Amino acid sequence: MAILLCMVSIYDTFFSSQHREVTMQAELFELLKTVLKARRMTYADLAGLLELSEPTIKRIFAERDCKLSRMNEICAALGLTLDDLVAEANRIDVQPTRLTDRQEARLAEDRPAFNLFLLLLDGMTIQAIKEHYQLEEQRIFELGLKLEKMGLAEVMSGNHVRLTAQSPVEFRRDGPLHQALVKLNMAFVRNTYLAQDTEHSAYLTQTRRMTHRTAQHILARLRDVQVELSNLARRDQLTQPDNALQSFKIGIALSPIVFSELLSLTEASS
Image (cartoon, rainbow, N blue to C red; front, side, top):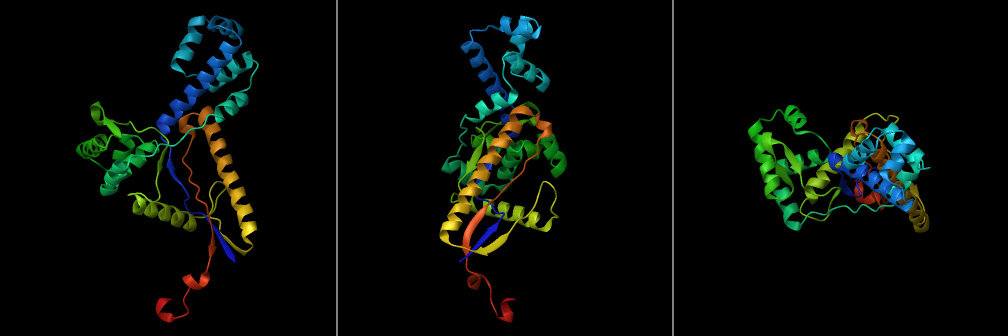
């Protein structure tokens, strides 16, 4: 039995960049609040340890935002490391949101609206989208209004489109968006296949004969890689500014392959 391992999509999950950064920071500060409460410490106590004013600490926690260096100082004052905090945050299970059948069906019927939804999920700004696709304000408004009617976004003043769908979003492989997802994933595989391998991107494929038991073992290891990728990416999202992050996609397919069903020996089909 031959097994083919290649880079194609198994899951179609998209994480909103803007929602991601806010959510990750919020989780860290909620955990810090839990630590303070467990140790019966007040904001004034923490301010004293950091030699800062109490209002400054209150503002940092209220805004749930500070520089990475300040976050490290807060952790150190509490006898923690940032890695400890991130590890605890990683234990929070983030379940992807699935759209309703109607939402997926309406996106499937309107490919431009679906594509705008994906671009916004990936964190691309409306201004960047307008410039890249050379779109007029009216076209952005029309597409944003369609997403709003689907319950996926809200059109703000200045034609700014804010997503309302909870992130991350997972699309069903067998749902109305099946063809669109196939096209997207095949384009990803093709582009990766044609591009030169680099230190941070590659196309990997290998065919070997093995037992079902070995294939099961390999699949389990691949699932471990998927979990590790999620954990490491989550750590980056918790500790790094959004402008330091870039979207990466991994697809894994492990399946028996029968070459006689794929290959022909007639010239007509060559």
